[in-house]
Length: 182
Image 1 (cartoon, rainbow, N blue to C red):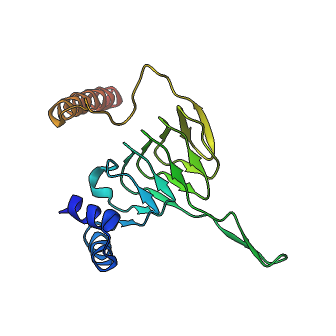
Image 2: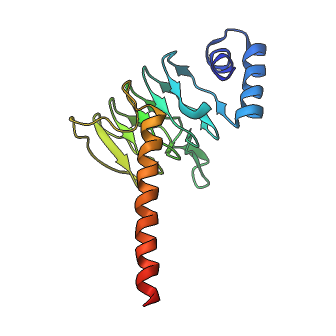
């Protein structure tokens, strides 16, 4: 149902259908999507739970995870009586926007970049970068894909790794408590 609502909300010619789909996305998924242009290949992971996505343009093969905010960063200058910093972000091809990231204002996130979990970005980010923290970035290591790719792990492998970590944790705590008893 989520994919159908996104398709109608983002690509329908009918304003009535778009509005109805948008309302249902907000009601069922806590997700608002309102873009001037958005590619049909954009993927919204985890049903984009908690996302507010108001962008000028989102290009091909972008992946957006949950709790992401993409929107404006306008300000009103009382001295001049003018609005400044007008516009919404452009997210270029093959970008991954990770959990909880925020991208604000008339900025461009360059191709093949990653906006890391929790990042707050209000400045342009060059292509092939990892954006992190507040307006920081570094060149992405070409040998690695982060967060998402078509060869993603099956959940069974992740669950097995989690079980190993829990066992390590339990062993560590058992040793700690035995040591404290003496």
